[in-house]
Image (cartoon, rainbow, N blue to C red; front, side, top):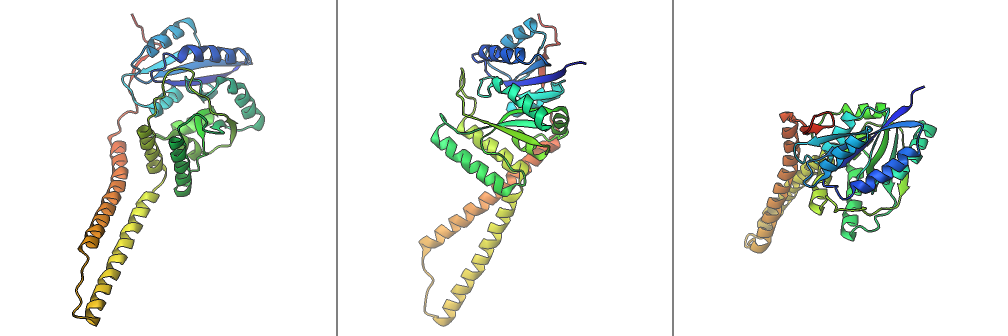
Length: 316
């Protein structure tokens, strides 16, 4: 009876410092699971350091190692997608190279998937220890907002570190949208999922690639991809302001009828109202623009990424 194959997908962007540590930890896990075969797929997302060279050398030394190198930086979502498309395994697991997703959890995840007969075992952080308080606060707000306005429910603290069966991987790959938010896609496709909670772990080496602004834009991707509530809110605000303006006009007319000598003053307050309404209009136009921009990108049908090199290419 042939062994089941597990595909380990590792998106990498400037992870030259962390990769040597990751190799050691992954080898320990592979050695502890002799009942399975493994392939490790490293997706180099246009790194500026020696990440690609390290992965190339690893592929020469270890036949279980494969890699995909992009022509430039396309983002982590593209990296995960490329890894899933390249995966040949009966199971696929996505984990970061910085060891914030500890490979040592993989045996437990695999055992849970088999024992519970589920299609996915996902991980979440039990706390955000070591993270700036401002980022933790906004992360909490993000999950609260998304879970209220979207039918897709995200688990707070969820990581991309997830083990999936082949049929779930195929379901994820069947969604060919250009604007991707994998945490939402994993929940949208359904299938039974078990969760493992662990404490937050600091990077083993290197620097985080996520800035506050980058995370903010990423959160907008999720909201636009999985909810039309902002459009409904914009419509409600417009309707509310329309009713308010009618009421205000009626108040002025009635006041003038009752006391014809009265004058309508308050230029400062009038300017404030104009600025408020103008700002609200721009906000609503901006919300609409977000949806139009995503639609525009989808209709272009550009590839999610461009591959420059794989382990099968001959290099001098």
